[in-house]
Amino acid sequence: MMEMAMDYMTGRRTFIVGMGALAVFPRPAAAAQPSDGRGRHAMPPMPRPIDGDGPGFRPLFDGRTLSGWRGDPRYWRVEDGAMIGEVTPDTLLRSNTFLIWNGGKPEDFELKFDYRITPGGNSGVNYRSAVVKDEVTPANRFALSGLQFDIDGRNLFTAMVYEERGRSFIARRGQFSRTTTPPSQVIGAIGEPGSSRTIKADWNEAHIIAKGPSLYHLLNGQLMAAAIDESKGRRRNGEIGIQVHVGPPMKVEYRNIRLKLL
Image (tube, rainbow, N blue to C red; front, side):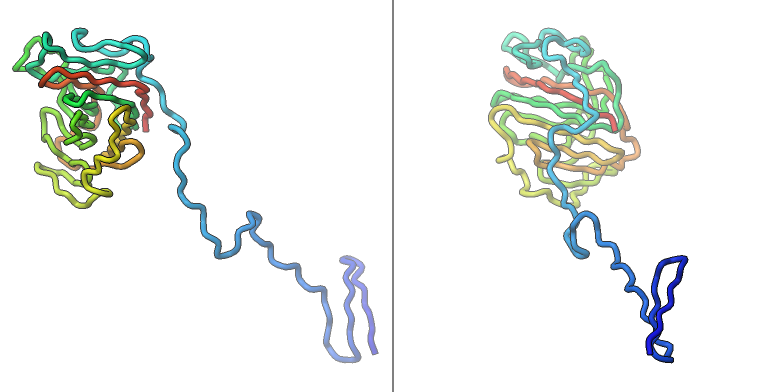
């Protein structure tokens, strides 16, 4: 004997078989499945290369003038959209001099720029730096002391973490180091030590990331040197400057200089 009862509040039917207590109820709805189409054990999204610079970067060089920068005009000019630093036989240096950005003294930031240098050239981009008195060339009002993304035409030191008028070598190319007091302690390697194959004979794109004590130097998308600067007297912010170096005649070019504050 089967009886049927109707719940008029829900519209559900209950079937009772014989005199027993067996009741048949509607089957519960299946558990909701992920809406993104991935299975329960699917691989999560993987990191992807960034497309362009990403948001937040602003140009520091207008490509036409040295507006917003200060330096010795004997060594700096603009040609064909590039900032030129040149030392000639008539303007040989006795001490390094810089073209210094007037826009502030960043602390945490990313800085990107393109550069090209002659084979015998020596240059670099300083950051977290301070203007200092030049004892060798007192007329040089553009001497800096501070951290540097090193650049040289022979690529012996290009992309290393260096400190001008300070601790000198902090992390060579291919090194991950920690520094409290000189010399730095190398705590790991980055890719192939001294991978100069990343460096092009023409234009290169450099990228500096300075965040707290962490310093990263990248070249053409490859991490080249990194350091954790834990020295007690480290400078936490400062000037950005571009260098021409003591030595033989040389030429270095910079373009697409852009900054993002962190």
